[in-house]
Structure formats: C-alpha cells, structure tokens
Length: 274
Image (tube, rainbow, N blue to C red; front, side, top):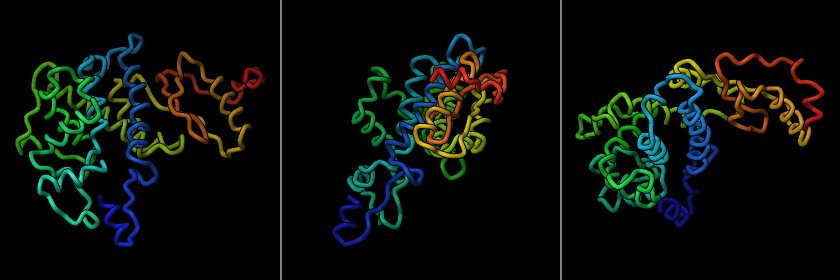
C-alpha cells in the first residue's frame, strides 16, 4: 500500500529490506537456520549441562521458532494496512510503522500472523495462552532501541509457571538475539568475532561451545570451492561443525577444546579427497 501510493505519485518506492541488503524473509531464514542448528546441538546428549538443555523441550522450542519469525513484525508488508484498519493513521513515508503503534500491545496482530502462517500447528491447541509470552520474547530480543522492557507495566501478562517462567523466557530471548545477529551482522566469516555472538554462545552453552572460521582473501571461482573444501576437511568432525558457508569462507561451531588448525594440517591428502 505504501509503495503503491508512492509509485502513483511518481516517487521512489520505500525500501522495506531488512539490514540494508536482504528481504525480511531472507533475514528470518538467515538467522533461523544457524541458530536452530546450534539450539539442537545444545540439546544433544554429548553436550554437558547448559541453559538450553535444562529449559527447552518441545513447547519451548516451538515458542523460540515462532517468536523469532515474528520478532520483526513491524516490517511485514501488511502491517501498515492493518494499523489503518484499526484506526491508526500516520504518514508512513515519514514515520515508519513501529510495534508500539499497535493497539492492545499487538496481541491481535500476533494472533493474525500465527493464523496466517499456520504457526499454531507448532504451538498446540492452547496456543492462545502463549500470546503474551511470544510478544515479550520477540519484543526484547534486540538491544537499546530494539527492546521494550516495559511491556508488563503496560498490561502484558506472560505465563509464570514451569513452562515459561522468567528464567526460561530469558533463555529464549538470548536465542532470538543470537538468530538476529547471525542475520544482521555476519556477512563475512570474521564478523563472528564482533557483535556479541561469542558472548551469547558462551552464555547459552555454559562455556562449552565457540564460533571460529576460516577465511579466504580472494574469490577465485572454482578454485575457491576447492580450497574451501580442503580447509573444511582439515577440521576434525569431532570438534568442528560447519555452520555457515559464505562466499569467502566458512564459519564453524566448535567445542572450546577444539585443536587449532594450522597450515600443516591442510595436506595434499585433503586436496586429493576433493
């Protein structure tokens, strides 16, 4: 609707991409895939005790997925139209829609998107009981201006029982923040060293996992694939799991005791095995 009005007026369409270079769908998928793989690793038997393993079973897993998929709902293309249908009118070209513009803390819009996307299949028959938890978790996964710590004072009533108490919600908030950082920050392998990713992973894994990477200085087409594959083969599978494949290298999920990879480990055998 916004862009239709702009185009009709001869103006340039508003760029609704997220993080400057990706659509909202790409942003969601780019964050969910690596973080969900980490999530499952944290739940695995070979990883010792950690907050995810202690707190997250099927219900909490589903709430994590749904909360992440909806955490940027103010960027959804139908959100401005929904606000206008609920008598919230602004000049959206000058003042982009925000979550706080939604009446009733956004409960009705969250319900609408859960129904639109079929996410209730993940949450079970009593999914409407989880709406306030999803709002709190998804609205506090950012930092500074991207978080809203005052929702409960304005009437939000999340669950406070063994399914989703404040401690479990904080674990899910950390997981969504991890997902969001993967989607927003990581464009090159070295980016995993910044943006708080390592700090979050350390906390979630109880100091048992870390992120590492190999990076290539140049992209040489098919030769890049050969070098990448040789470098991957040099990382022992019992310590390293390839997590993100980027044009100039690979990010790994590694155990904290993983041996460092040196050039002598990248042998001719690695190259011949490609």
